[in-house]
Length: 307
Image (cartoon, rainbow, N blue to C red):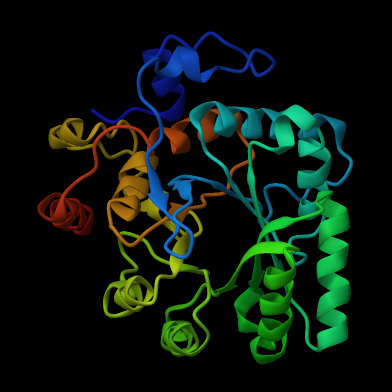
């Protein structure tokens, strides 16, 4: 039987709660904690489910939307999720993240990641400093070169900033299979702390060699496009989860797709985007409980392919 996200909340006794009375982790699970993976370059533990801010956090000064997004971050925090990924490309998202987390007791709960998305050394420095200001950070956890734009220039700045302590980690990002080969070459040459790229249950190009390259060179991975821009949900609309999903504590199709991703040992974190607290609860639930083994992963892939 497939459960909707609202039915999941009901299953945990949360279905009657309105938006203003946001569910808590204590209500959802009193014993389970989100799984973590080690960042290879430091050994720091990073929770396997985070949140992306593309489109979903681009709400400007809308008071109504800001209240809802604060609840999204509240739920992530309660589950132990940490990574918030943004970019100057994402409209007002960086400033929204800064506004929502500007609280001494709240801001230290997260791992802040953003990007540089321009050409030229001076322009890159100006844009990154603007991101620090918008996100209200004195130190950025992770600064990434967005879609490899002028990466040869920016990598020099990022390495220097890491040495100076202005950023803790640096990395690269892309969202297309066609960029994977280039990402591998840069990993071999520059040894970034992180690389962010696309991977999903149907889009598995990274399994050919990119994951192995990351592991061999101690590069952590962040996964984008986990739902293929929502297309995966179209494939399973009206379809029931197979009974064997219970063995992996999968209660929704969102968890099905996310658990497939994080069950790959080379994945450090996946960043599904959402602007809805009940979706955040569902997404974070994928970081709890058991994960499929290699045989289970292929079973999941085969089943989806048959629908």
